[in-house]
Amino acid sequence: MITTLRLWPNVTNTASRRSPHTHARLNLETLESRDVPAAITDNGIAIATYNGQVDSTANLYDALTTAERIPTVTPFPGYRGALVTAAGDVNGDGVTDLIVAAQNSSGHVKVFDGKTGALLQSFLAFPGFMGTVNLGTADVNGDGDQDILISANGCNGAVKAISGQNGSTLASFLAFPGFLGNVSVSGANFAGGADDQIIVGAGGVGINGRVAIFNANGTVYNPGFFAFPGFNGAISVAGGDVNGDGISDIVVGAGPGAPGGAVKAFSGKDFSTIDSFLPYVSTVTNGVNVRVADGNADGVRDIFVWLQGGGYASLVGFNGKTGQLLAQGGGGEGTNSGGDSGSSGDSGGGS
Ligand SMILES: [Ca+2]
Ligand SMILES: [Ca+2]
Ligand SMILES: [Ca+2]
Ligand SMILES: [Ca+2]
Image 1 (cartoon, rainbow, N blue to C red):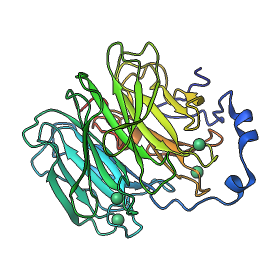
Image 2 (image 1 turned 90 degrees about the vertical axis):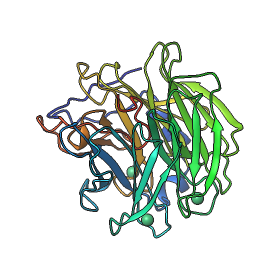
Image 3 (image 1 turned 60 degrees about the vertical axis):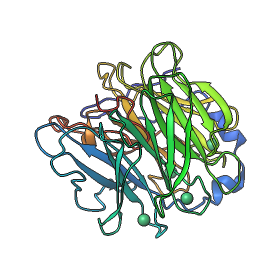
């Protein structure tokens, strides 16, 4: 179902990326969903940079302009390892905040104000756990503020949700008991109530990119689907309406080992494939991180992708409705020595 190749580095092919389902999809849209877009204010993209040589850093970029929103943050001074990142407005001021976690650190998470750069929260999500984690956001308690989702790799799909407002634990469950591989985490609203649901993606040998949706209490909202049949690697997940039908969709990126960094979008209505593409040339096998944000202010979320280990230079954004290229973070060679991790789950876990 791969439709086009997109080149990287030095992206030159700016042709539209349209899935075979695009026309059918347009027929399903209502006038309301196209003409009265909802305002999307949660619009930052968080990316980390690390190379083991200097202290690891994180940045918050604007989805519309790809400009930096706050000065570069060094969340854990002295730490030069992998970081994972997420972005969401945790304190309800309408400005996306930056969330960062260090690896092998008891799930040490820090949250920085997207307006001032000030430290808002610092906590250990999994005290005593010295493995790798992934991050996402969702409003799991329906108070209007994004909460922090964190998953622990290798631990039965352990997921926690921490209140963005006060750091209290809102959810803690095992998504996949018995599964000891990598899990990524994100959120979106599928049920239509105030509370968002939690999307968990599992990857590994024989797992085929398993995606399932959970309620905050750990019960299964929907058992989901397999994003990449035959793929034995980790995956990255993100949630949001990318085709403008008003229903949250799920975007999945393939982790290390997938040629070209395969990305697929699945309709939240029936999990049918609504988009499928390779953001990079097939020789690039780093694996990708995916996130959704509105990059053109049309009220519909768009698909942002960057390479694990590619950092800001590899960031590309695609119009969710048309597939056209919206944004590029850097586009050049030579700036990808640093690593990065995804807001919606670095499937590699910083390895
Ligand atoms: Ca904020
Ligand atoms: Ca909340
Ligand atoms: Ca949708
Ligand atoms: Ca958009």
